[in-house]
Length: 344
Image (cartoon, helix red, strand yellow):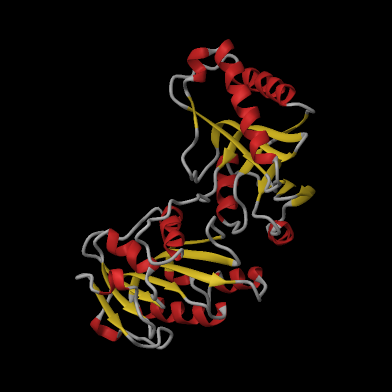
């Protein structure tokens, strides 16, 4: 089985290495995408196997299953070929509910308007031939933990695209900035909630290590959580006097709550070596000082796959303390990865 797996620009080599570690075979690659052969396992249902493998891939975004490559020289030709493929895929099917339809493209200049024009033309063609079905075509939810059926197109170049009728949609979503948020890091927290499928609730206790100027803290305060912000630097004035915040001017890496605090959440977004941050999080989980966590790791000067291996080490990593552990490079991560989890 072939899979078209997309990634961020300049991460094709890292994703290739990650796929090889998981026993995929690489067939082709381009800007922001890799065509790989999926390693099948006897006795494991296909959808379950793909879903389990997909959740292990940190640098994968959307995955198209058994994609068909299409070449065309014009918008109309592209739209026509895609319409024919779509109509053939739904022939004989009785569709009552909404059907996911998603047009994506590599991070290449001019591809965005190209994909939008093709999609508009494609929808017009579908509407003329099957108006009822055209009304059911909607963008899918931002995250699917298992393959979903629909229509998925990925433009890999100006005259080349891939189409599939099933895909896995990774938790990779551009969030909307809140004008009152103290920093851009707010977006990373908002997106991480989608990955974990959980977010702080009213009156939950949260510790934010390295909180200043307060982007993640602000995200939690919006949800009426109670925040202990740990940072020697000043918090943003807009949230410093919030009734639900306690600011402790301490070294976040050395802060230890002891038995006085059992936090519902731990946030950590500190510019430091990943190994040091992981040791801090390991200590928190070992002592049961938090139940859920969101951590951002800076990978610009290290091998990210080595860091992921450390996280997943059953003896010294985080995985042994977690009922849920997810590692991803999200939309708002730059040279970073996000680790989220729930303690056992």
